[in-house]
Image (cartoon, rainbow, N blue to C red; front, top):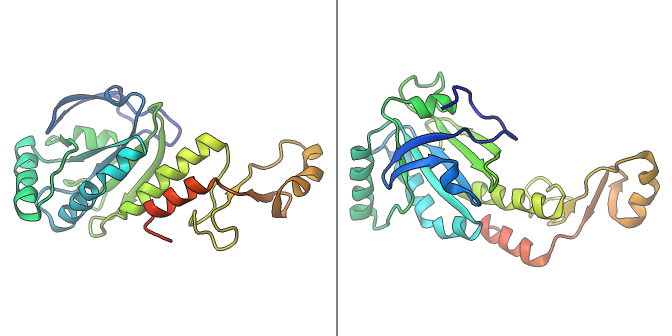
Length: 228
């Protein structure tokens, strides 16, 4: 295992982990799929329990985006399994994704998931990794703040649109205040491209032009974001 936190644009480091669904090799076992690796401070904690319920409730939406979920904390596998049972018995939902057992904290430290806020607990870190095993986004939340699952789904959808259409997405996409659900065009490659930019696209300036996004992609993005 590399002793270096991966950065956006780098390959996710290879590591062997123990999970509630058996041993796994990351990222190889998820070849061809996107995955979200998210850490939580500890099992049987209030905020984490609400997060796991939300992740489980929306797991089918992640799967529609060819994305798998992987949890992690510095707890033992036995603790993870008992917590999963408690959630099933009391909250009536199944945790179908694996949770990495990391009682020594080795995985968490190598992924930069242990911060000054707590030397013994993982912060709420999120790594979004694409189907080529490249880290595409990293999010950190403090211990006290639960994650926004809709935003994680929106980010995956937006990243997949970037790959598919070679564009960028504006703030709050697909509900931007200036260009609504449109995609932002990449900047012109040369000075010679500038005069044609405003003729070919709508925009506010040659360096800020946009194009309509496919209707079906916008609809899915709005559903994932829980917005209309």
